[in-house]
Image 1 (cartoon, rainbow, N blue to C red):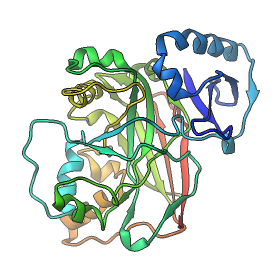
Image 2 (tube, rainbow, N blue to C red; image 1 turned 120 degrees about the vertical axis):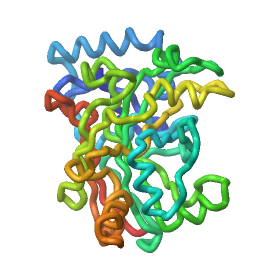
Image 3 (cartoon, helix red, strand yellow; image 1 turned 180 degrees about the vertical axis):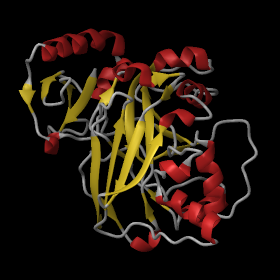
Length: 318
């Protein structure tokens, strides 16, 4: 089942169920953040709407009507579950490896998520504008101390995310030890949130085993796979909930999708490419994004479907 949010002028938007071909919707008479808080009660209603859509019912809609599936959340926690990304970033920022057996995770800005075609404002190109393609999950209420085995049952929806980053600011904030504020503006989401069964065999071992196609200004940048996570999503959920409950609607990200075979696969962020260039040539050759640049991202299943839809955004000067 695929869900989306239409812009109805309210902060959380109007939740709709989307037809299998992505051309028709039926209203759910609620918002996604409200639905996830009462998932067992709302799910039968959503499934009934999905059945009607499968029979050809529903209203047409346009991409311009779509916001992020969850335009704002109570909490956004982003992991860094791809070891290859961490190793390359240490090279990019000339930093020592982080010695830990725990998942890396930070708490980011959650009061807004940009929609899939929203133009994105930035103050200055000098801040090092970068995109980061990743996958994420939305959970219902998770009790403190949950095991990773039990955490799997709390994953209700899967999303595709562009975690915007400002690379010139990040090292300064990292050195303070207090986490990111300026270096991590609001993220973007692809238009559709999907239930795990929508991915079929491409949701296994608690991982999104899909390709993520990334293009910068229309040129191929990466075709990375989501199955090389060192920690699964249930493990990330359990880590986040070790000392606290997680409120329904919490979004947890995988971190930038990154593969060992980066020479073939490419990357999902510019900073990784710069690190690869440092390894190969002794210095970075690729600049970060300019104002007016565009980025496109699209998750693709093994059978060629695009369940999340596409992110297609342009930067502009705020």
